[in-house]
Length: 372
Image 1 (tube, rainbow, N blue to C red):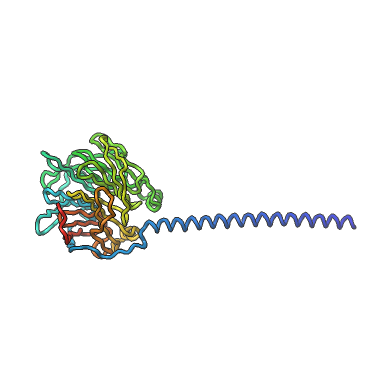
Image 2 (image 1 turned 90 degrees about the vertical axis):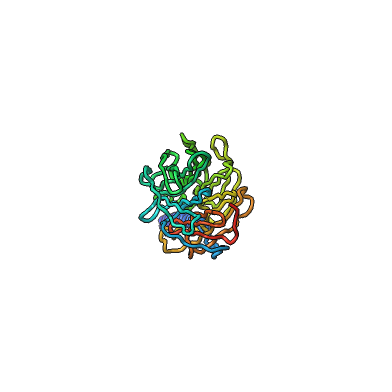
């Protein structure tokens, strides 16, 4: 009996030890799950903070403009505006509504009415970014990014309101183009906003995480090559008046880059300036000053893109060409006058403002005349 009781006691001890082992395993497993859950929550909170911090959610936007603006209808989704200062004509890209295309506005007249231009020979064009090239003894040329296919189309302006198709440039490196800067009769720089194709999770992640995967491609008239890379959502691009520098807007990182041009078209980083909003298109006036359209609150801009009835603030700033001074606000609005402005282009003491989802553009008279 004593022997049997001892064996029973031994079994109880062994059973207790196994029970404690199981308890330790469960405790260890629970603590691992808790740690992983905590790390996941910390990562999620950090990600949300990162996205909100870059969205300008805390920015205050009020109406600021030393002048008066008049809305001009007749153009849907006037995303980009480029001005021929010699002929006094503005060219406006329109990629929305029932009549997308390129419009011309004679600015020296008393009634700026958009004129839809014939695009014979260009095919089914849905224009986005625009650029103008002028040189002596030949007609000016207008360059347009086509949203419908990844290409750049070149026209000749045989008259201020007459376009003649010259050529269409498609290349494997021109994948997701947004804006173009003419650098010769058939040479240009074009921005690719993303590395990922539109519509997929990769594109969404690339945008929200502000990944620096965009680039600038240089086409020399014959072939294309990457001139600058690692730019987050490479958006607006413009060539300086002397042709020595290229300016690129990064929407993802809210800054404007300046690049020095090499003889072969390659771009060398030459500084940058942060902007009070996500940078969009860039216009350069004859005096060399840059006008840059900004989106002060990106989440509002995204909501406006999905539903144009929801307003989004707009901001246009002026930058010195050396990028050493802080941006100076030319125009600001909470969305009541124009939402999500994508371009501001100066013509003397006038400022033309376009927007991605608007059914009009603004023709603004500034209070102080700036030199042509």
